[in-house]
Length: 199
Image (cartoon, rainbow, N blue to C red):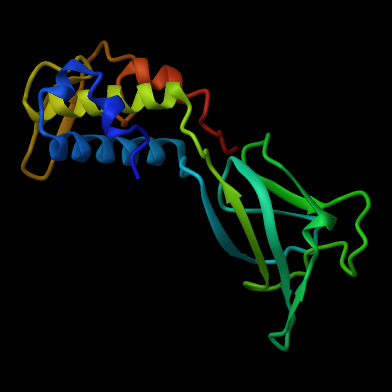
């Protein structure tokens, strides 16, 4: 799904000059570029992660921006599933990844996530139900950058590019030091405040 609506994207003069289908293609592509850069999905979704237990009181799920835990199960060695009431769990999404852990008042029979392969199932909701305005702006900026590149107009991030087996060369003054050349500096300034750095 796109990080900006078609109506909002049409506020940009360059995008508005295209058909609705063309605009949608650009904002869909820009949304994918942004989510790859941030290494997480942005739009709200509910998913179930199948994780390896670690014999610790906490475990990391696969997405950031977690807003709610729905269910949690320990898969026993005989394949039976023991539910952990989510009232006994909490989460901290302020670090590089979202950590799920047993709460202080834990009353479940578990206090750790038992070591095992694919033996922990956690369902949760993550992402934004309403995309922040600045992320929508960044999405439009990336879409315009891609439009410039495709139309072979001057894009300040590029020195040269080739379409056959796509290739590019960063301009000496691009200043990003990044291979994400579809993302202009103005958008990077926004996105970096949302990016999780994994050490």
